[in-house]
Image (cartoon, rainbow, N blue to C red; front, top):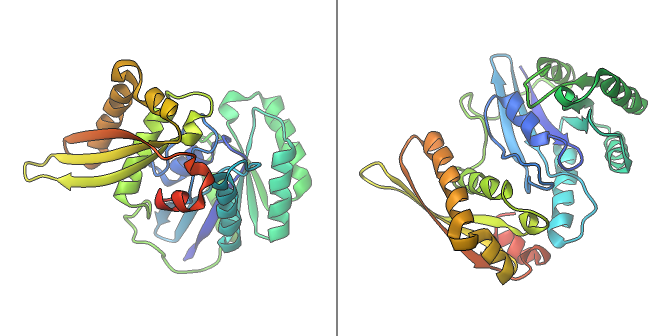
Length: 290
């Protein structure tokens, strides 16, 4: 059977996580319009009778300003070194910039077979799509596929092109396993996603979520305790919101999604805590699971 690991790379906010979710067929990575939503490698597994593709969703490559940013770029580099192939995601709705060209050069240097996906075709004109494909063609990658991850359009050609370059190999994960992430990690990510949709400016980058306890009670209720970690006291107030409105609304939305995911009633307890300038301290980044 064909099998292998495929690194999904690109600039921040080009739709990498949305593409991985669409290819796998279910949500394995959170999404938001905020850059650097993905903070670690997320593996999404597409399994079929004759192949298994392990998509490795990576953080967006960017110019780092903190220890966290440096670590995220290192995660991408490591993922490329270990990958059998790569999916390079570009936006059909925006021009190809220096960041895209930097990533393309790294991919060429790595020598990994690359399928270039021009994403967000649902929001672009035919002229825009044609222009992006033409500009990207100078890199001479294995294949180029226009697609819409959001609408689920033209995804099978992405899989077909990858199968042409992936090696024969074993099934790395059980057939019924869509991701290798722990349940606690996914719970924390779902909670963080709901806050990202409500926060502005730099605060989304300063927020981390840590699940401290998950307990399934005899009556079937799942009780979850989680910490919302920020870098300054002023951010703590913003995360809580005036009169507790933000933490209440985001928590309610997270609880509803978690109940659907876990199949049980959920009692979600959220507490905000300050860890001063945690993004700048590698030890704290490690303790927060990144």
